[in-house]
Image (cartoon, rainbow, N blue to C red; front, top):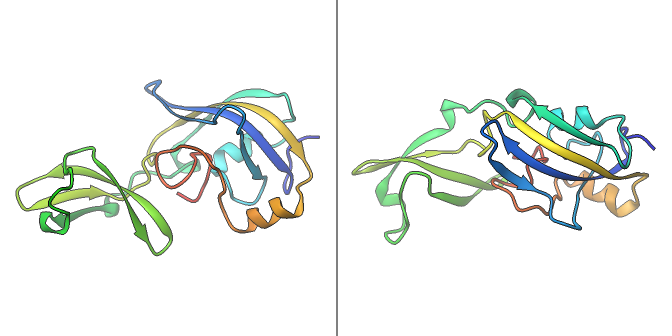
Length: 171
């Protein structure tokens, strides 16, 4: 069976950046699963997977516009240093998870000055070209629980920078 809209798909993947740095991978025995065509993974990856079948492997490159979009300047904000807990590790590169109206978001400290901290609210992979080494593990009709999960958004279950697995589009 070939990957098409509304089919259950499970993939093993390794995600790296142009630098070759590996930033995520599916855990052994726990592939990334989704319902094709429901927006559960980034559009560029989903488009390239269409028509593949179980057992197929591919190296897929996804440009920023088809992944998490370009890094946006309007998502860089200065926050008074006093807004952070005194004991907080406030250094460039430090990451925090915060609640937003749409769920958890990752905040990355970009610069620290005497009274202000510049934070980046972009998805950690925004502006990045993504390289996926994928293997299709399973393609089949979804069951009722899987369809219900698809209606609720991402259910990746991966260890990932950001809000969910890098295959997800919810970030």
